[in-house]
Structure formats: structure tokens, C-alpha cells
Image 1 (cartoon, rainbow, N blue to C red):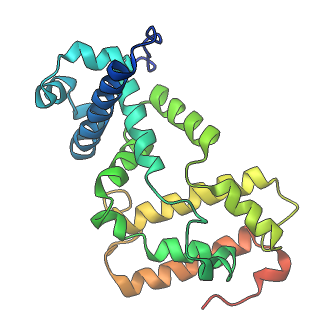
Image 2: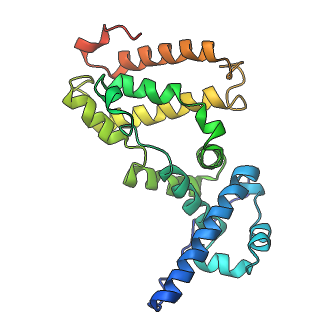
Image 3: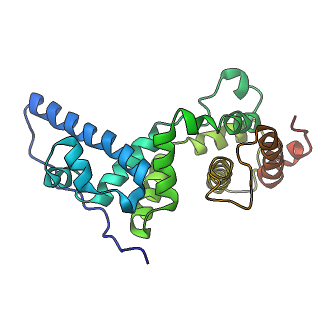
Length: 235
């Protein structure tokens, strides 16, 4: 049974520091977060040790807690940085946006595999946050995702509504949630065999993934697509 953790505890805001001192503190904080990203990505949340992190950084363990309050507080900041590092849905080429909402989704799904090569550390941190932390920390992660919408799902749904491509009889917030749940889970299945060893037995097969993406978009269009758009063929 996983060990219970306490909700993230953040230190009270310190008294104003001189500009130079503030800059040094922020630089140290950023260095802790950057190094912690690699530790959590490589070892997972539960196996990563603050002692090891402090030793690598050559800082006192207590100074890390002074910045972040707890291991959970540190991971939350690491997760935020990882999530913010990824492009939003509408950060695709203009030529793709002009083809519409579902082509925007296709654009990112086809490029899913690059996360294993170019963005492995932030992707792994997000994966750990989504599947490998306790409920108290997961609740804080969900609050962040709802408040900030780092992937721009809400803006993508507004874009689709303006183009008449998704249903108007469903709450846009629900459509955005469906989009995030399904797209994220589908991408994880494409990339990470350990999550779905029976669903996609050969997640690295490019030709099979093209077919899977095609089928996924067809199912998603059937669920949230506007009636006038549901019958359109996805090449």
C-alpha cells in the first residue's frame, strides 16, 4: 500500500529582499526545480529522495523544504513547469489551423512520438503526476490544470465552436474535459506500453499508429463533432 502523504505545504512569503538577493534566491529556486525534474522523471515520485537531490545540488535538505514546504510541494512546482513547457493545441502552423479543429488534433497526435525523444523529461514528469502520485497531490495537480489550462483545451474548443465543428448542445467545459481526458490517455497509450500492454502491443509501429490515430479521431468526431461535420471523411 502506498504511503500516505500530507498535502503540499508552502512556506510563508518572506519579507522583501534587496533586488540582488531576490535574484539569487530565484536562481537557486529555479535550479532546484530543474534538477528535481530529472530526479522525478528518472525515479518516479515515491522513489525520488530529497536527500539525493540536496546532495547533487550541494545544498542543505532544509533549504529545499524552505522553498517548497514538502516533497509534494516540490513535485507540484516541477509538474507545473513540465506542463507549461509543452505547446498549446492552437500553437500549430497556421496552415493546419485553417484546416480546422480535428486537423489540429491530428497534427499533435502524429507528433506524439517526439515527446519520447525531444521532451522526455517533462513528458515523464507529467506521466508520473498523472499516474504515480497519491490522491492529495493529484488533487493539487487537478486544481492547477483546471485553473491554468496549460494545454489550451478551452481555447481550442472555442476555436472549434466558432467554426461550427463541435456540438453546441454540450457544455464547452465538458467538451474541453473530454478532449483532455481522451487525447492525453490516447497519447500515453501510443507512447508507453507499460500503461496499456494489451491495448497497443506494438506502440512503436508507425503504420499501425497512423491507423489508430485515424480511428481515434473518427470516434472523437462522432462523440463531440457537430452533426453537419460528423459525416466528413478524415484522410
